[in-house]
Image (cartoon, rainbow, N blue to C red):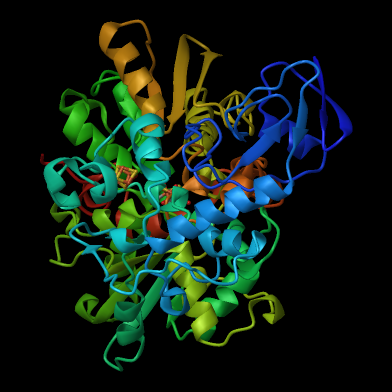
Length: 574
Ligand code: HC1
Ligand code: SF4
């Protein structure tokens, strides 16, 4: 342990702690901008400077380790003036259209200006114009709002190991973009959106598709159906200031109804169908009918990564469409036919924690035999939050509603899809029971829970061992892929999610400031809300879902059968 004094208060912290973290533990907040714990620790922006007795210049506290006997001052005149000047210089090169900016209510830069007492910008430039790059289906970049903190590039390079964005040019001309300033849709971006949630300003945002949804809602010829993803119900409340990990499913359903959707169904229901199909596929492969390990296919960021960096794994990837796409497929076939509605008149909207889902809905191999694309528009959690606000719905006053039943009853297995390990656990709940003819049927598989990047487990079943692996975040996915390739890792079933921690931490989720992300495990809090929901549910295994049973009996036939294959599976073509 190391003992030091911060603002004359004695503090003892473990060796290796930074001054910023030590100050926090003693109750002093040091403002920062470029610092993202474990991701971007470069001490570049100089907002977090402090005085250390004996040091010639101010030091960047986010990268400065504590030493025995150190005396630190976090709030002297010299420190305050330095931070203010630094921020004024950053603002001098920032297009300040705060009133109309997508991030106006939750911009870290605006918050910093307020926290540091900046009441005028002495060097403001009056000739700044938008620099929009919107070539990709999921993301808009406006470099006139970029502060060059490098948080986006660090996430893309280190967390995701994709590395398609970085600084171009030098000096005053420095700007973030793709190599040779190519458009984002021309490079190997996987659409994960992790750069968006890392960005402190409005320089990065999701492509706003709310206008298309409002147009459909206003079109009397359209029958507009909506379904939210598993993790959205435990994050949407953050858009309205609720604590991280609050489950707002009931209010969310009421909000969707009051926005005017004709049917409010649940993507969780479709996740139960995914388990039926993927479970059947796994059992068939275990019995010699295809390559092992079987790798999950729900995460479109992972699918895109596979196509670009591991195409030889394509035969291992499940042919199941993702729950989002199974949802749209069932709405435009089973629901349309049962209700006698022309599927061309149905407009399907999904609410997703994910920006890559905007890309997935456009993928041609998803098209249904009736010619329809399953989902018309995929909105992020943030976009839904904005629609609710713009419609004047007082979210915390809304009564709880329930989903329309026809595709709106689901299980605890589906609920946990939203957390890393959830798809695996949901599958095991059904598959182990089937493999052992009901002889073994544990409900919980806690080995695959938690926020570690790579989790492994093996299960001894009569006559066979089933080895599984779960990885989230593409850096971890790559580690496992390399292990599978060189034979050092051997599994039967693998779950890959592009975003670290799974969908609860997707690129479309409500954005939390770095000073929250750096000191709170937001992934764990959001995941805990899903596991709590699972515990409280009437049905906890996908095959027990009465909607699943009805639809297979009345419409689809057997899981893995001909019709199920036509509607719920696809062949990746790249
Ligand atoms: Fe996910 Fe999935 S869990 S991929 O994270 O399989 O996005 O929540 O909707 O499709 O169900 C996302 C979440 C989501 C799909 C499901
Ligand atoms: Fe990188 Fe993901 Fe952002 Fe694309 S969306 S630039 S892959 S972080």
